[in-house]
Length: 136
Image 1 (tube, helix red, strand yellow):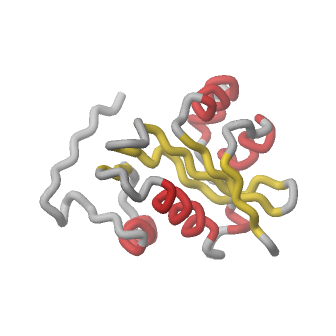
Image 2 (cartoon, helix red, strand yellow):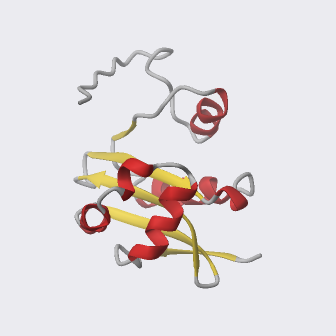
């Protein structure tokens, strides 16, 4: 399996729907037009492909100069634990290496915490930063 990475916001909506539904992110697929528009308005989208099949992506928002926010990182279940998410994360972090603030917000789970910590992120509950969120 040779996974290729591409930087493009133009991804077929059916492939997006399959990916997001596969990882049970149904809130994103309730309105596919909004999902596609969200990708188009993102700072960057890096996707992972197995041939012509979308198997993962990372979506970045922000100004790309002083802050980036990792909005989405997801990989099809059948392709998980093969290093694809790490490749996506490293591609994004390398591309924006000079950006001072790299932020993400995610649910607490041991495997999730481990993934982000191995990619040099520090949880705000263990560092000197504080995080606040307003959720609807």
